[in-house]
Length: 397
Image (cartoon, rainbow, N blue to C red; front, side, top):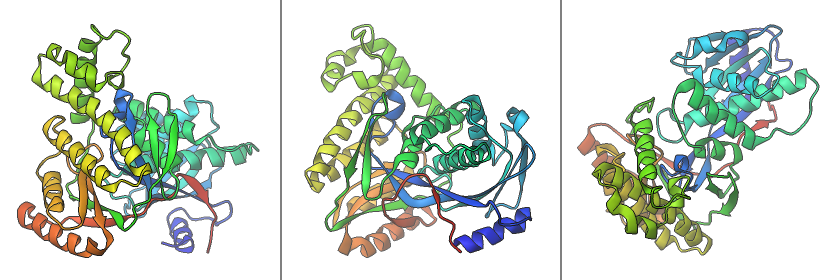
């Protein structure tokens, strides 16, 4: 919807006038490479998308937050003085978790009405939750600052960290920082080379001369919750503790080099733990190699690294599944494809493929048909454009 239609929809839900209405936006992300490395203190290489969550916001005079989405007809109403009571909501808990963490961090969070328009497909692995969190954080801080007469620029890295804490403490998913950081700090036509240990980062121009990133959505809905995701994290931590006996200075798996791993992998006697550690150690190296390849314009090497990443996620980290593997296998058969891999946490969601521009239509047709024939329902495809991070947008009629 355009801004005029969004405001009209907002007033339809909440009533009142359009005075003091503001609009905020934060994007989903695609991770080019570096999967399940972020919570191991490693390297990732995401880019913000133009697919985004938009929030229409207006302050209230009481201490309540009201939430609604344009594709949901149920309104959530919560009291800012008792946010913990809303942790188990099916929808709205991410937003209220962000409010809770902002209050803990000393921000002035005021009562408000918030309406969400989500263009990031839910459960797709494109970080719809991070987009919601960051858009909420920017909206709440902006409304609170205006109410209290503050005009300082919002620290977007702090917004990313606060959003991550909301997911840890309110939702119960021990996610890494990548998704929130990419949604907060994205820049048009750039990927973010991020060191997840200290949050140092570099914006790397993405020049795909003659090629595009095509996102293929399995349309298999997934919800990580506290299950497989936290299980993988615990397995990595167990592997790290074993290796710290011979590499005591290691604080996370990122500190284990490929050479260290090969030298000491015999200590990882549990086959599952060994496989998890091997993926993380080599995936970190693939990120470093991919950044170098893109800076040098070596798309062929980048495509090979994408393929290696998916194979490792399939065989060592075991987070792909029939749907993702089918999309990747069929993509790699197509003319003009340099590489294809799952993106996001896995267990469903999306793949990203590097496809020659002149072959994209045939790619979508062929991969889509093969996927439906094998899986039984259709995949969705998006030509990925790299956009800007979370921000307030000027209200335009």
